[in-house]
Image 1 (cartoon, helix red, strand yellow):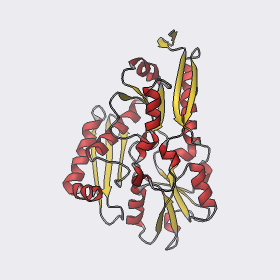
Image 2 (image 1 turned 45 degrees about the vertical axis):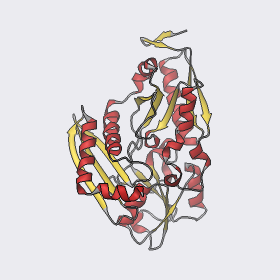
Image 3 (image 1 turned 90 degrees about the vertical axis):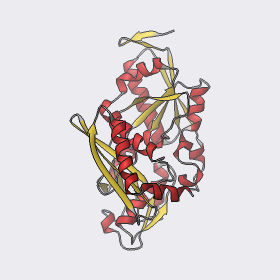
Length: 316
C-alpha cells in the first residue's frame, strides 16, 4: 500500500542493497536516514551483501575485471526483488549499466580529491627516493610515476581500515586514498595533505554517490528526486560520457573531473600509460545543460592527441 508523504506516494517498505564495507554501509545508512526523514511512514532497511570485489583482495582490480565486481551482486538483488535500490560510490559504477537498470539519483559530491596519508611525511614531495607508496588505482599510479619517478608504487587493496592498518604496520611510507571516504568515516584527521586536482586528477565520479534501481521503477526515481543534486549530476554525467567514449575502466589510467562555474562546466581529462611516461591532457568548457556533449568533446581532444594508441596497447 502506498502512503502519501511530502506530496509523493511513498511505499510501506524500502530495501537498500549495499556492500558491507564500513564506507559502503556509511553511505547506505546516510541515504536511509535521508529517506526516513523524507518519508517517516516508510520502513527503510539495508540489505548488506559481500561482492566478488570484496572477496578477492590479493589481486589488483585491473586484473580481475574492474570495479564492476563491486556492483554485480547488488544488481542481482534489484533484479530478483530482494532490494529496491542500491547505493554506490559512483566511481565504482561501470560506464554502461546492464539493460534494465538506471541511475535514478546522484547525490551531492563530497571532496573529490585524493588524499596523502602518512605517519612520517607531510606530502609526496617530502618522500625520500625509493619510498613505497600504496595505491589501488592505475589512475593514481600513472600520475605519481609521472611526477615522482624516484618513488616505488606498490598495489594496495582492501577497505579503508585495512589500508590504514597496512600503513600503520610499516608496509608503506604513504598511501593515497580518496579524501571523501576518509571524511565520511570520520577519519579526516588521518589526511596529512589533500592533493590538488591539478596534481592528481580525480577518478570519474569520485566523491559522489549514485543510487541505482531497475529502469521499470519510475516510482522510485520520483521518490529519490529530493536527494538528487543537479550540479553534481551535471559534472558526473560529463565525466562518465568522457570515460564511456574512451572505453574507460579499471584497466585504463584515466581521470576525468568537471566543476560547475555558474551555468557552465569546466572539465579536464587525461589518459596515460601505466608507467606515466606518456600523459595526455585535455581541458574544455561547456554548457551545464548538455554535460555529455562536453565529456565527449574532451574525449575527442584526447583521442586527437593519440589516446587511442595508449588504449589499444593496454587492451592487448
